[in-house]
Image 1 (cartoon, rainbow, N blue to C red):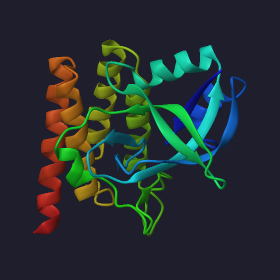
Image 2: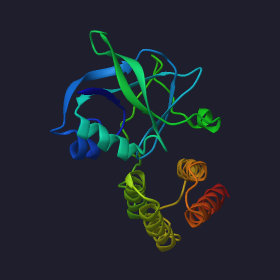
Image 3: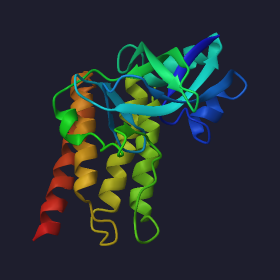
Amino acid sequence: MTMIFCYGTLKRGWGNHARILVGRSTFVGEAVSVHPSFGMLDGPFPRVFECAIGDRVRGEVFDVDDEALAMCDELERHPEWYRREERTFALMPDGRQVTAWVYLMPFEGWMMTAAMRPNDEHVVSWDYRPSAPAPMPLARAMRLVVDMALSVATSDEDHDAIAVVKEAIADEFRDDEDDQFDEVDLADEEAKLEMLIRHEAPEKTIARQREIVARCREAVEGNDE
């Protein structure tokens, strides 16, 4: 068995936990990183990176079997996208320290300005719940579903096909007054474009994402007028 630290959709109650870890792992406990050297990007799936001056990150530790570890590597596209690294975590509430694998994104400067704010104890944690005063508009909900599909696509062909669906959704709901893009949408789409470029995604996939970013930026600027 191998210990892994989960901070996103592999945590209990989320879809990837049910798909990958149930029946293949043992819950060890909630935990927080010992060293304040992490940042986290929010969204339908979180992204954690390591930096010189950061915060502690909170999540859950599991003992997983070889099959589950291989499935996690595939989910996170280790080592092409995320990189699995060993770090030290303190189990809660007793503080016992354990070494566990955690999936980290390579650090890039823009991440610091987009990182989530920590709590008063300088701890960041993820429990994504889109905030809205009314039920989530259909188009935004559909985009979130497509983003989740993009996060688990296992080949360039799958990624490209899903990107086409995302573009079709953007076209269908472009004039929907109840589904205006905002600054959070723009930051998310720009981050996805950065990742596609860095990981050398197919040119047509990058081009489609550039179009989505442009539309999003245009909508945000229109909202400010």
